[in-house]
Image (cartoon, rainbow, N blue to C red; front, side, top):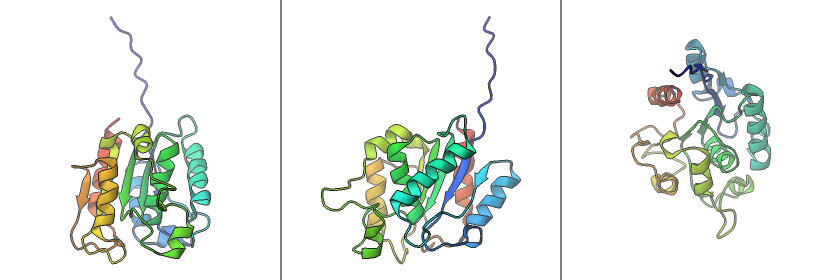
Amino acid sequence: PSHQINMKVPTPTVIICPGNGCSNIRQSNWYGIIYEKLIEKNIPCICKDFPDPLHARRDRWVPFMRSVAEESSPGDPSNVILVGHSSGAQAALRYTELYPVHGVVLVSATYSDLGDAHERMSGYYPQGDTNPYLFQDMLTNCKRECWYQFHSDDDPFIPLYEAEKIRDGLGLSSTYNMLSGRSHFFDYFDELETVIDVLISDD
């Protein structure tokens, strides 16, 4: 007979990675709302201000996210779910090139800097053949079925084809969600809580 000790894996910690320009993350967009909803359900969630909020530079954000993962899940920093919105989605992509995670939710992600010099300076975007996305590394660090992506057909900043290039790079199908009429997802949306619940129950 097997005497298997049932070691319960701790619930993954959800880390909210905001868009740029948010100096008070809890008061911005839907970040504080999803934080409260998760905490109410005893799902650990980190929703704190990121450094360099205006420029959201990769060389500041990715190491910061790593330190948050190590602090919040010291036994296993990979036991985290990154929820990234806008610049935070770019940071989540680049983080996952380097480090394993339990799951990723991308909201309003873009493939290119869309010709915006300020965005280009952040360091997330491919430039010609340099700085490519390492999609294979991302999938090694987070299995494909644990990637979720949300985009809207009326995003005023990021055309749908940009999101679809990320979708195709990761090879997503059923976990890619095009929700019509949601703009740049400034407002809270129930579908976000639903996919986090799915990721939490899948361990």
